[in-house]
Image (cartoon, rainbow, N blue to C red; front, side, top):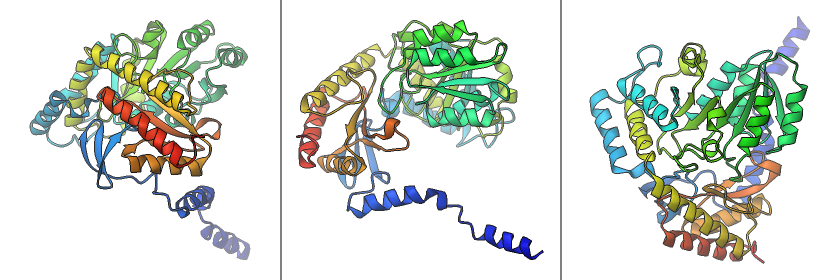
Length: 412
C-alpha cells in the first residue's frame, strides 16, 4: 500500500509540460536577444490582400498564402453577407445531422465542376480533410507510402488510422519504388504525395511517381493545397500541369489559400466515395462550416475557373522575385521558381529572426519557419506571393530584402 501511494505521489508531481522544455528554452533564448516575437505578430487592420497595418505601420504582406488574392473580391464578400442574412451565423451541427444547408451542397458541386470529378466532400479545415480521408481509407493492416517532407496533417492522419507508415526520401522516385516493392502482396497500399511542398516551394515529379504507384497497385492521394487555383491550365494543381490528374484517386485541398476563406475538401472519382460521409470520423463528429463561409468559398472557386490572367500575373511575380533575390545574393530553396512560394535560407535561427525583424521594420511581413517544422533543420524566411501584388510592389520587396540583408550581415 505504501509503495502504491509513493508511486501515485510521483505521478502527481510529473510535469506533463517538461517535454516542451527544449522549445521553451529556444523561444526564451531568442526573445532574450531583444528581437520581436516572430510568432506573435498582430495585424491591426487588413487593407487589401497585399497590405495590412502591423505595429501601427502599413506593411506589405508576403506570408499569407493568399495566392489568388480572393479575400477582398467584392463578389466573394457579397456572397458571404447574403448567406449570413439568409442562413444565420452557423449550423450548430454535423453534416450528417442538421449541418447540411444548400450552400454546403453548392460548394461541393462547385468543386466537382472545378476539378471535373464526380464526388466532393467538404471539411471544416484542410487539416481535417487530410486527417479524415487518410485515417479512414488506410487502417490496420494497410500500408501508407509517403514523402518524408509531408505536411503534419498527413502524418497525423497516418497515425490516427493505424496503418503501417513507410516514408521515403523527398521527391526520390527510386526510393519510393523500393518501399512499394517490399510491401506484402495483396496488402492495401496508399501513396501520399503533395503537389507543392510548402516549406521550400518545390514541386513533386507526380507523373513519374503516380506511374510507379499504379505499377504496384497502390491508390494515390495528392495534396494540392499550395497549387490549387494557380498551377495548371485550369488551376487544378501540379497533377493537371503534369497531365496525370485522371490517375489520382483522391485530391485533397483547402479553402484557406487560393480560395481565400477557411475549410478543406477531398474530390474523387471513386465509385464508392460517398460512403466516406458515414465512416469518416473527423467529418461525422465535427460541426459543419458556417453557411457564410461556404458561400464565399463557392463564389471564389467558380471565379477561379476563369482566372487565367491572374495566374499568368502570379507566375510573373514569382519569376521576378526569384531572380531579384538570387541576383541580390540570397540562397533560395529552389534553383528556379516552381510555385508561388519562394523560401530564403537563413544561416541560423537567431540571424533568421533578426532578418525577419529587419524586414518588418522595412514594412514587409514574411513567415519565419524554423526547425523541427523545416526540412534538414533549416531556418527559412518563406515568401508567399499573391496575384494581387503589383509589379511595383515586387520591386519594393526586392529592395527591402537587400537593405535588410545588408543591415544584419546576411549579404556579404
